[in-house]
Image (tube, rainbow over the protein chains, first blue to last red):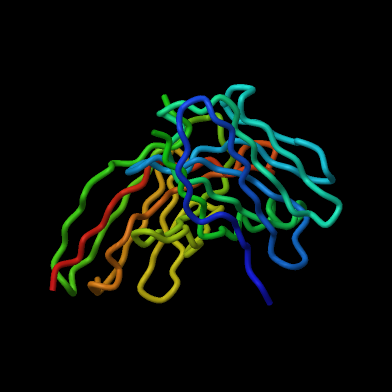
Length: 116
Length: 111
């Protein structure tokens, strides 16, 4: 059973560029949450997708957008990259119902973005 | 006040000692709390959950919740070098559908 898979694992961009990160959730999961983790910090919630809709959003600007596909996979897009967007981007999958009961998120290994 | 707060550490303990990790929370989260462990360069993994006041034990780990003081802790008995990691405290939001994480505490267990 494949866990949560993310791609790419590492990427380097320059300021002003755009980036797309991809995530495939664990089998049986229908909800994808995206988190940004800066070096030495805890994960910060960006947004959550369920049933192909954005259900929750954290305190991130509109430059951050996402999408969920019918197969539950998801993309995170960041436009007009800033130096401060350099971070590890974590995708976490869960069952929408089960999350409230267990609080268990299954994380991918992350995509490390460096903005120069 | 942030929703979930932790001392960033590092917390250094000798092998075999008890490591005590602490977390405080605000009224903006629910009463469901979780401890995740994150090894350097890896993704977080769930190790403990606690919902009720008091203690919950699982092997060498004990989670403690004090709702009156809005305080959650994780005790690791007989600490091992392999326990060296960052420990993240997390809480469910009041709607029960999103986790908020603290900044994490880095634990170093010295042989």
